Length: 163
Image 1 (cartoon, rainbow, N blue to C red):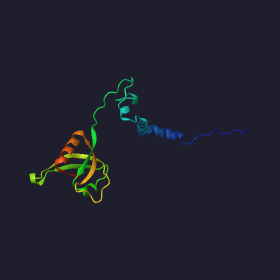
Image 2: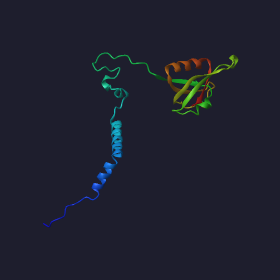
Image 3: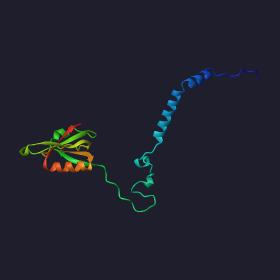
Image 4: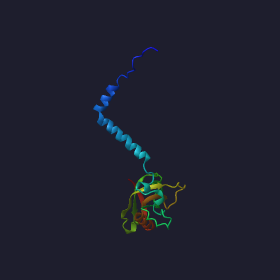
């Protein structure tokens, strides 16, 4: 068998020196890749994100005992009838609106904001011809704001403005 010269990889020494010179970039790249991997493999549920395993989540005790009462929901969905049906046709789910209540003209017709930044979750399909009472829209608001909306809807006309 004939004698062959050793195989040398050209440029390997240069790449190693370049990596050492730019170690800050290499470190930053390594940290970014590690962070992306941790986010991808991290906890999926909110209870697991708080350090609670799914079987020990509130309402599901790990010891098999009686379920504890669940906490009140922060936000609720509230169906609201808006006086102007044409305005409701402009809304789409995901929009943020302010809901304004206007009193009867006989009492001065003062307007007040009942809900600020309410999230539109659903806009039911309009009925042709639109009813005289306006059109329905479903909003996601805090519990206290939902109570104010229902109270205002019984005595006043409601309108929305896009945020």
